[in-house]
Image 1 (spheres, rainbow, N blue to C red):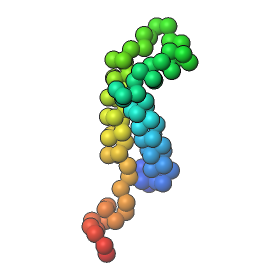
Image 2: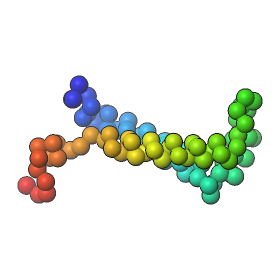
Image 3: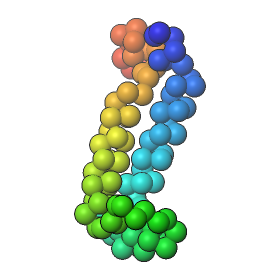
Image 4: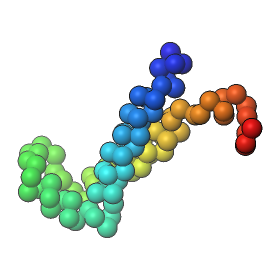
Length: 88
């Protein structure tokens, strides 16, 4: 299991997820919220969920939390695991 967690493929997927979360956070930030809200209303029809600035702010908060969570879960390099700090 440790080999899978520390694999390069896992690190790539985590970085990809961080990129998606950052894109959502940037789109839902208060500065971009009116433009994002307008785009969503024009291109996506969600009849049961009213798109509001508050909903976008919630998506921003979730996306920023996920960025931090995923950054904390990035696999560390092997030198950190071996206890080596600094140049060898």
